[in-house]
Image (cartoon, rainbow, N blue to C red; front, top):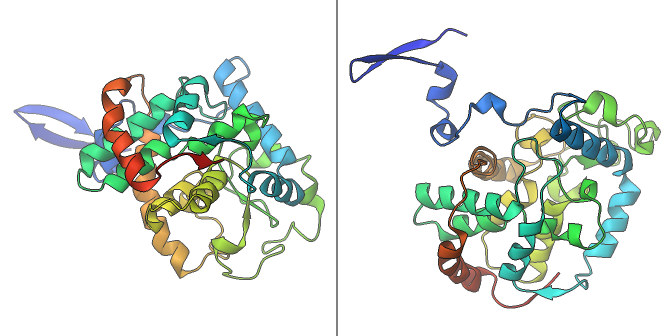
Length: 295
């Protein structure tokens, strides 16, 4: 790739032109191309952990499986807890599908929220969305394997999209792939039916979205879209599923992408002072999602 020569303080720097108009480049602490590296390396324990997690996910996430999990989890009768209590649980969770960082999920939550707060100081609901976006991962503490909790989501009930990670190798044993009801472009859906009317693979995004609605959170619709679709990479980044989306989905995609760069590029080994930050975020929890919730 041709590099641009930029003079700054009489020092000549070589700048990758693809980075100039990418605002996320200014706060990532490693090259952007090093994020979401799903290359296969059996000698790398993290890469192998990630690959295996996705292989299990893509084998078992079927229409019937998703319906079963929705019936189980959307009763919201597993336990009662405040948002803060649930967040603290994430201190004991390392996401097995994440190739970018190998540390407790609560650190990622505060990294995301604090960078959003820095860039959008007046949008407190956006700060809180950054903090809680992965909170649905608490399912992993209630007998759910991580392949049913974490990772990129995709539509079940139609042809598996080309941009799904490990697409060419990991769906070989998924029975929906040979089921004529589900293995065509539209599958069981109608053209441009809208994402509200499709089944996504089961995971923390879908669970938290429904949990917040059930508990009458006052977060705006943009926040709920960010939460529900932030892991739906085949749609918001891969360009797939356009035949299923409608005008509302495309409007919400802009907000999902606005959020996505904070979710992805703030992952680092720099740990925020979580104890010092709690009072501010507790005030936002009280404003938008107060009290003990049904999970």
